[in-house]
Amino acid sequence: MILPSILSADFSKLGAECEEVLRAGGDFLHLDVMDGHFVPNISFGPHVVESIRPEIDAYFDAHLMISEPLRYAPALVKAGANNITFHVEAVDDPVATARELRKLGCHVGITLRPATPVDAILPALDEVDLVLIMSVVPGFSGQKFMPEVLPKARDVKKRLRADQRLEIDGGIHVGTIEQTRDAGVDWFVVASAIFDRPDRAGAIAELREKLGG
Ligand code: DX5
Ligand code: ZN
Image (cartoon, rainbow, N blue to C red; front, top):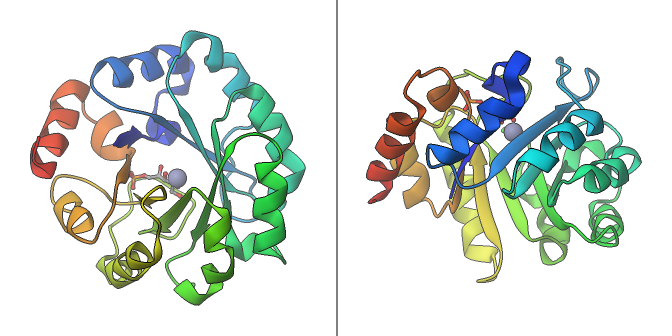
């Protein structure tokens, strides 16, 4: 699956941007929620998700780069998020956090910064639907892919059940996507390599071509 991340969209016409990347071949939308505390950037919250939801039929994959995921997750699910991914570094008890999120009726993901070892997420692995490997330091689009996270992706993939997904986020473009697929990634988040191109359909087609169509 290719997930355009709207962090690089033109927010003056966000609804149209979302529709365009989906029409252009994007599978799901990736929504980066940032609080200016867990990461040094602020993006958007439930109200923006709620605003675009009626126009968009796609699956909403929310990536919470915030210090208190359990505080804001209910509003995000109500606004239309289908999956809530939280950062293991943001919580004291990842297992309890995943279980609380599950009660909201959404899918649940766990993620970790590039510098965080895989060990940190292992206790919660059984509780989640997906693991997101961050391949940049979270906070901004347009950063350079960090290949040193690939061993983590391979390690996690080996531990996942068949019904769990492996996702990667940060610096994914035609020059990096193949090595992440080879490491076992199922879901590819892409912001700048889609939104910074006038021809979004062409950008997504090139990415799919690298994945083998
Ligand atoms: C980074 C965000 C990403 C970001 C990816 O903190 O989580 O989703 O939008 O941007 P690119 O694809 O440009 O690296
Ligand atoms: Zn993200």
